[in-house]
Image (cartoon, rainbow, N blue to C red; front, side, top):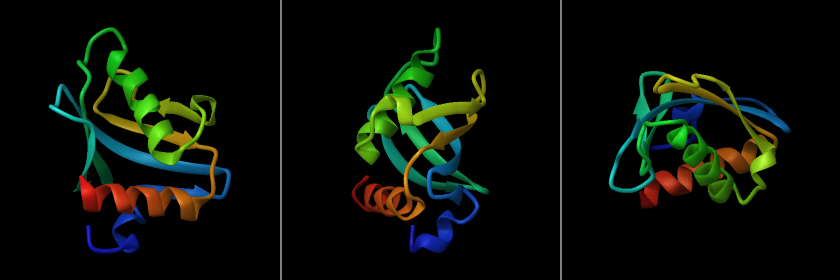
Length: 106
């Protein structure tokens, strides 16, 4: 991704209530930010899409990425869908910066 403007559609909200609009691909070789998928951020997830394992792995992976406790992240929508919305209790600038850094290394 070229710049923070790419995230405008996928990373919304304000400090303390950041909404991530995601397209998740479970069953990948490793978890990573892949880029944009329409107006959503595409995430490859190294967890199978069975029995909520992918949702739990997504929250854990994002918590590690943002260096936050899991309690600061909540799956708001998309429990049984690839399209998900996650709320992060963190500063908006930090969330965007960490996602952009992860997309460059990923």
